[in-house]
Image 1 (cartoon, rainbow, N blue to C red):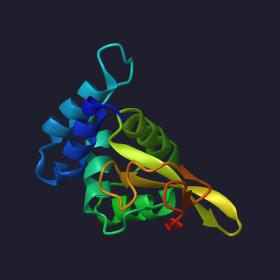
Image 2: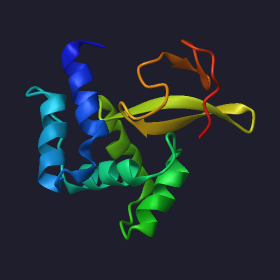
Image 3: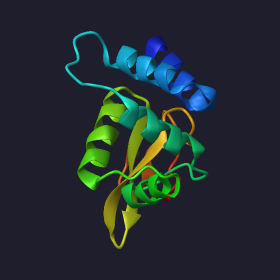
Image 4: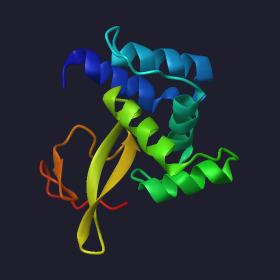
Length: 134
């Protein structure tokens, strides 16, 4: 991870107090000027929800339930698209955790997770060997 990417993950990990417009601007800045991605309230709401979640790693179902609990209904297809944009902006990280014998995507706010910056594969941190749980 280069210095700029490291700085951006720190800012997202500490972005809990940021306003919606500040989050949108930061996500856009991380995507870069050549990105055709549109960023708006959906992305900021999702990022705020992920920041407020107690778990380091959450699967899409847990994220969906947290959005609903906060009064932010979102269809699953939109949730997956928004997660992809946040991942491209390096605001969140996607990892793999075992679930019913198969790997499942889990997400965390970049820079916040216990093993952020480590290389992960199939639910195990390849850097230190610790299993990751959703």
